[in-house]
Image (cartoon, rainbow, N blue to C red; front, side):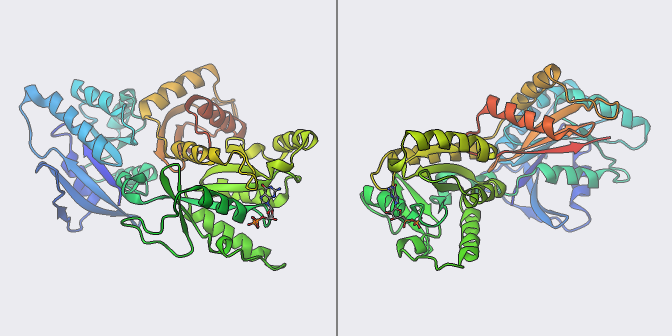
Length: 433
Ligand code: GDP
């Protein structure tokens, strides 16, 4: 389960808020190894989602050491948690210490949210707005006294809290990266798998700590073991009888779902088929990294090549961000370029843009090209944060609806600025009236 860390100066109402967030239920206090005694982790549950709530800083340093102490707290939270909630006392406003902590948190590569506590009457709601200048996005007002706002706050937090804790990620411990090798019948999947398996010194059957599903193949490429999912049919060269397309497509979809990156084979010697496009759409919609392999390149002549260029612009425009390699499973042409392409795509898929950098870029962009006016109103984009990786998922906080054209513009510029070659990216907009 992912962890949300709560940080803030002493006496801002942090403990009251934590208790509110935990509700009346018995809090389970856990001992987390390697964590000092001033950090407590609770199991929390909201709207059916489990997460851990980490309350930092149980003791209070003297006033002189306060700033360093809270900054340290923030550093730790950023390193250990999957999202951070900064608590600020709205009745006092942003103090120098709050600002110092906000500066630290703006560098975070995890989402950061802002809670404004002690908003016990409407008068204070306007003071809350002042907290925007901490540069951490929307301040969420809560009242410790009557608990008002804590539900909305939790909704907002869970929206940016990743499903998967950061420690579950990455090559270390998580086992080989999972690859789906897909494409329409006779495009050359078995041939390619054999080629790749033949080039390697050994097909690894047992990697320490991994149980191999018999339908998967472990293949060592370029010194790294990859797990090709659901390849049993390919290995046995089982051919589909006609009328089995429906099942083949179910199979494709489940292979894509269980993979991190999809290698989609397309027969370059023939016109791009609707079926090819369907598979590509499946990958994009499933949010997986994508490498398109144009196979049978040995059959491609000058004419076909020009045709293919036109088809690419017409049919594959929605996945123009994909990594692409022209290969031949028959001759082995360019097959050594597959692994690097797969690694680039996975790296993009894993990328996280720090909140500070993201907003700096966004502010400049929006200043130069503001969203189009709708219904006489100019929607403002207040703040953005990357809520998830795998695939990179961004949440924009705005004062009004953003048109599809402008969203596409933002996505295009986001790609130009930060790369993301080989991965779909997602953009969601939260409108605040
Ligand atoms: P699968 O159904 O996707 O697994 O396709 P296969 O690997 O069984 O290949 C189908 C046919 O295409 C076989 O006759 C292969 O020899 C042929 N084939 C596969 N890759 C290539 C290639 O790169 N070039 C050429 N010319 N033929 C290929």
